[in-house]
Image 1: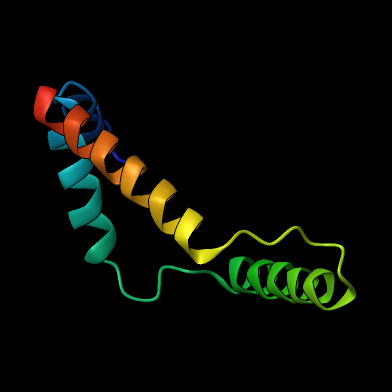
Image 2 (image 1 turned 180 degrees about the vertical axis):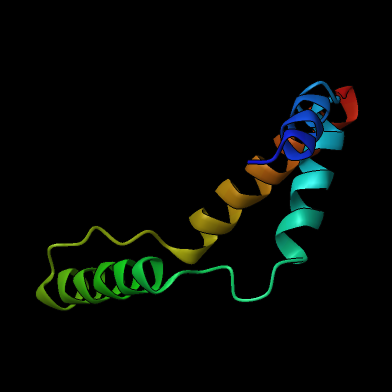
Length: 85
């Protein structure tokens, strides 16, 4: 990491949490094809394993309504925290 990148990192870490989240999202969105072949292979292996668990009945499935309820709660909490900034 260059000296200027280290300085930017130091400044970014001093930002309020909401600003850090916004900056992180912007930086990630600005990078095309940021998933390496190793990460893509790991995801493929993970997905294949999960599909096998579902097909074999070893996986405990969660109803969509429960997943949506948990996701809404997590988003509401993140929104609440970002406003505290």
